[in-house]
Image 1 (cartoon, rainbow, N blue to C red):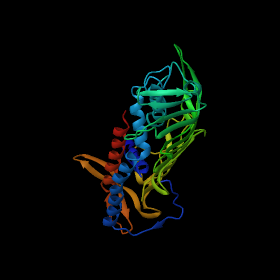
Image 2: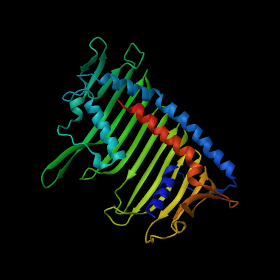
Image 3: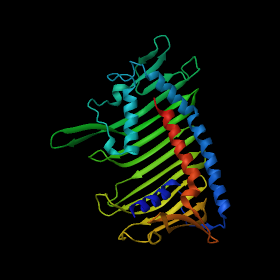
Length: 358
């Protein structure tokens, strides 16, 4: 049963942050639904190329290459440790979770790194001047001048102090980060980050806006409610929604260890799965159709309901399998239907992670 719930939630999380109040039924055939999925899958490759080859992504890669052997930026820490450490810190909390936190025994402040750093091709390092901000001017690949600028105008941290039986763990977490990257005076990256942290270093609330030309990423997270959490995220290409999540999670108790209700929607381009999963007071042998209410949409038009059919998975073993049930009563295996999108999304993130390694 837990595996089935996991698959159902995966379906909910795979694919838009649109409300379905005015949803309409549309009589799509099985072939038309498959064509819709394949069309969205075909666009993932273009999205990958646009993101990885964007001026913003390339500028960060070029900057990272210069930092590799710099003894100037970072002050008391070697090479690119400061920049990589702070980026990793954010990634760990919002991707890997608080357990992956890295403590900082010698925490820095914004004052420690303030300055104007300009790349000097003769010394193959950065020259530093005084500044009230953190500004780095550097060349992108192929440029003979420092045509790119990274600027952090606001950087604030909060000190977290956890007292344990045998030791005290003290470290800093970012609460505000505001900055941009420009190439040839055109903004290619812009970040506006704000977050609140609990006394144990867990994220309680966050509002993050990241522009990496031509994409805009938005994340809103709120865990300050007694027994619920809200998360909304989106990825836009101009005004077009590429990927979006809008989710409310309710928990059994205030410690938020056992989620019992999920409601929301997830989408990639025109494909959306929306609905709710209510696991309160269910029995181990409960029919998932009684507590899982999900549907597949093409935009705001309902394609079909997601239903669960008990099938023999292997000789002597039965389990529920999710299907999309169309208006005419025909069905398609949900996993098979979404396979092109799932595979291409996995490749999307795998390629981006490979490009992001430095």
